[in-house]
Every structure is written in structure tokens, then in C-alpha cells.
Image (cartoon, rainbow, N blue to C red):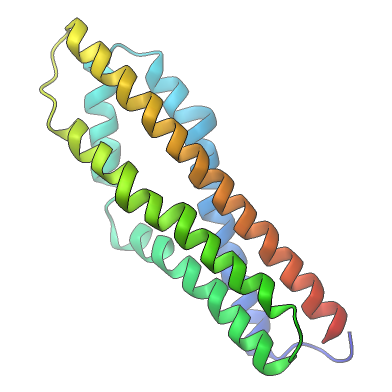
Length: 169
């Protein structure tokens, strides 16, 4: 490293790491704990529980973190390109693009519509609801795993960008 990073860049990198890391862990823990736990419950418990969780997540704080993450990745790219003027900015740009495609678009076009459909289900103990839950859960988990993988790849690319920034700054 030639010189210390400007405070603005160091702060942006720190905030971006917190955002990207938090969202990756959020999706990861859904994959390994929340959904497997809900799948062990009967549908008349799992469906209203999932609906309550989905409703509780619709907060300005979560929405801000969700939508600011790709902007932070892209801002790191712009700042790196402006300050360091080397190819390391590409990794930050790729982080933002992968996050938008694999997390934001997947959430908006697949997971959220699945959540909306689940919210329409009237809960009572029945075989139909058990089948509804199993179908929902299988689809939702597949796409959540893709969101987890995408956010993890975005975070890995972020770290590679930081490596290049520190190596060539």
C-alpha cells in the first residue's frame, strides 16, 4: 500500500462490509435455521408463523439495508476508480451487479410473490395446507439459497476488491 486510505473510503468500505455481511448472514441463517425449523411444524403453525415473520421484516431499517447494499458496492467501485485508478474497482462493480440480480431481482420477482400467495392461505389443519406449505417451502428455500449464494459471492468479490485496493493504492 502506497499510502493510507482516505477516511471517506475507509468509512465507505466499513459500512459496505457491514451491509453486505449482514445481508449474507441474514439469508444464510434463514437457510440453515428458520426454514428447517418451520418445516418441522405442522402447516397450521408454519404458515401463520412465516406470514408473521414476513410482515415483521417490512421495516424501513431492513428495507434500507437491503436496497443500500448494492449501492454501497457500486459506490466503492466508483470511489476506488476515482481515487486509486486501477482495475480493482471492477470487483466492487461486480459485487453490486451480482447482488442486484441474485438478491434484489430474485426477491422481487420470486420470493415476494411467493410470500404474497402464502399470505392468502386460510390456515386450518388440513392436508391441502400441508401440501401448500411444502410446495411454498421447497420453492422459497431454493430461491433463498440462490440469494444466499449471490450475497456470499458479492461479499467475496468485495473482499477481492479491498485486497486490490490495499495492494495497489
